[in-house]
Every structure is written in structure tokens, then in C-alpha cells.
Length: 193
Image 1 (cartoon, rainbow, N blue to C red):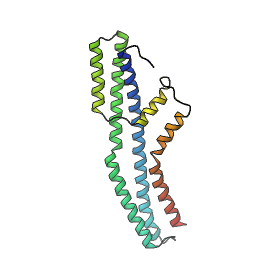
Image 2 (cartoon, rainbow, N blue to C red):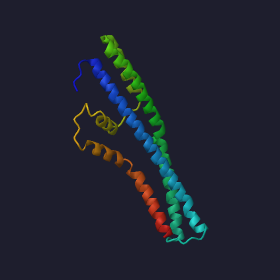
Image 3 (cartoon, helix red, strand yellow):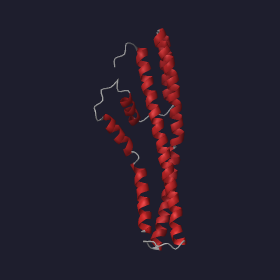
Image 4 (cartoon, rainbow, N blue to C red):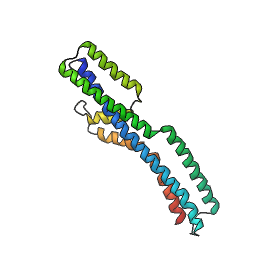
């Protein structure tokens, strides 16, 4: 969409960036929840496996093999916990949400300037404020931008399959969590049947 002047273009960029930041917040929050649930279920598996032997339940696997799997699960929990602390999903989500809120406040100021007619100096000050906000925060991913592009479809000519494409890309990033949980669940099922 062609803008009439620089201030309208700035307003448009701020709105799109804020929208992308809110999508990034939601994505990071979901990663945080998925990773915590994965660790929780692995920990439950680590507790459940020795109970099979303790209560004398029939197991399809030898004691040595079961002990080996316990060690593997413990290592996986340790590695996964270390990776999660490095990824810091919850903190990153909060920071990127704060960025989105700051950008929304800036968008309100810019919109007011559009209505009142901004001087070149006011435009420069608002553009600098926008740049300052961007410099202080982590950027969103290309996937977050694609969600914005889909959400603001009046600005873009998206093909009919675009919503399916971005949802598929979104789902792909959660496959490792699902594979780990299915793998653990299948192993426990095979152990007790």
C-alpha cells in the first residue's frame, strides 16, 4: 500500500513491527510451555520406571536395559534443562511483549502527529524513537512477520495457501517436543506390555 508521506509510512511500519512482536511473544510463550511440559513428562517417566521394579510389575525389558534407559532419561532431562535455560523463552517473551507495548504507545503518538500534521523535526524525533525501541530489544523471527502479513491481509496480496503455509511452519518448530514425548511414551508402553 503506497503511503502519502513519510509519517504515514512510519506509522505503518510501527504497527506491523508491534504486531510481529506480539506474535513473537505468543510463539515464545508456547515454546516455554511445551518445553516445561516435556521436562515434566520426562521427569515423571524417570520416576515411573523404577516403580515397575519396586512393585514387582512385569517388564518386557531386562533390568540392565531399564537401568540404561533411566540414565538416558536423566541425561536428556539435564541437557534439555540446560538448553532451556540458555533459550530463556519466558524472559524473552516478556521482553518482546514489552517492546510491542512500547511500539503501540509510539504508534498512538505517531497517529496523533498524522492528524495534527507533523513537522519534519517531529517526524525525525518520532523516527529516532522508533529506531531506539528497535535497538533495545530482540527482533522477531521471519515467521512472526509472516503471521503479521497474514493478519494484515489488506496490505498484502497473499495467496490462498498462505495461512496453511505459515501454520505448517509454526507447527514444524514443535516437532522435537512431540518426538521426545512420543518416544518416551512408546518406550514406557512397550516396557509394561
